[in-house]
Image (cartoon, rainbow, N blue to C red):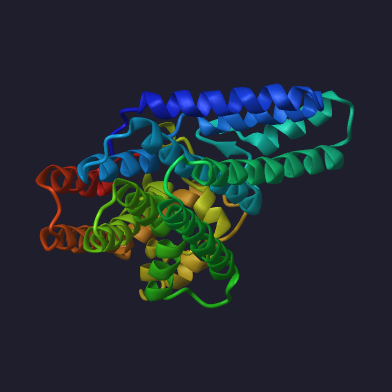
Length: 348
């Protein structure tokens, strides 16, 4: 995935946050600080979703940079909202190698003289509200687009699908982690599709295509491509969450193991003779680095790492099949093909 940042997206995000900070400052300094934290948390990402919106729009003949930038920003705000809420659910305090909103507001509470318990409430409350605000901003960006009502409603429907399906995936992820029995591979893949692929790949591509006025066959082909490549991306992401370099990924390589996250790695491991050894340590919040290393070695030895990488490649092949059988412009096909490769050939 390209790391080239669309300056239009950065400018629009900056303007939105600056306006919100100004309005919030008229209400309460803590509220203004919340918007500062939200702006900070929104920075530093790979901007995958805006890039996909723009790629589909430009590739299918769109020419209005102002319009596509606002749609791209809506999907980046949606992503920010989901990350913030995901951290609350997982009780994480670090995002992209930096203290997240919950951690920053808990520290703010302590500086204001509260006790530890109250500071935790401050942090969680701030994070929930920040995620809600980002979600509201995302919908507002689409709702105020100066385009014909039918197309605007279609874009709102796409954004609604992104939220609705992702919520199902988030809930499934939590249910899977707490289940007494190992999660099957089909269940894991369904969860990946719902939690990540739909909102991160399918919907941004569909939104760009709809905004450009594409035909239904092209929109459907992009949606199918997005679902397959989104699953490949998330399988790779989960592999990096265990085997990646924290200095590069910006997150712990042990947190998924401590959490007991049910990934493709774990689904494969559960079918092997190594499972009792792996299950004994998986989901232990006190797992230390040496024990995490032992689990990694067991996952490697049982073939889970190789199987997960092969499964990601299989979904890249399925995504490429959709491209090869779609009547899309050559430049768009080439751009999507590059994204397909980068989805699995990355370190972060």
